[in-house]
Length: 280
Ligand code: KMH
Ligand code: ZN
Image (cartoon, rainbow, N blue to C red):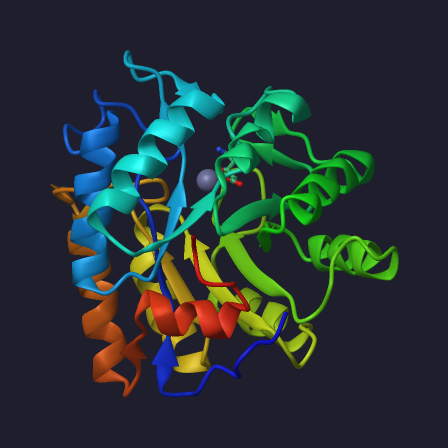
């Protein structure tokens, strides 16, 4: 799959608008139905996002990896926006691999691939090498571009094992997920070190949790990386002020990028950079 080099003046903004853990009790701005998700996806696209990291929910808000719910949401999204849909294969803690891979049946353009087990709050988010292999094989078979979710330094080495085994192909697209309680903290020196360990080709970005989202977005932008924001990772626009959905967080990330000479790319351009064949 041919890929274009990402220019230093270009930035890919990803919106993570649903997640698996956030509840309506925590924020009334969480989209749950397919129509709500599609409307929020469009708002995020209009604010500068080119990729949508997607989870879905049952009608009562419970997280699910149901292919039917994903299908419904993706259809609604594609009716209103050209944003790249990246489905989660992480789902929620405790889900089986078979449950987690269901959205790959819905023709997403990208899918997450979690590259190692971590403590996730008081729970354990399991991603053993055999589990990683099983998901990577399914992603490859579906012809979907993986985004590697790295929560710890060793997760890059895990990803490289899969490259060695032929289950992943460079250039890699990496998302450092920092600040999860139980895993690596979102600190500037941590990010600088992680970036220093990456292969020279490929792309990388940062998704930082809670109050770390803004400063890590700023640092990633300065270091030439990409940025993920949204309610999955952070509910607040500023201390004590709930973000009215993910779009205001995307809009702020776009402002941060432009102030540093980097322009959020369109989904069309992001497809070229990420090596995604045009949808349809
Ligand atoms: N909900 C987390 C346990 C992913 O989407 O791939 C896992 C997660 C990662 O959100
Ligand atoms: Zn996720």
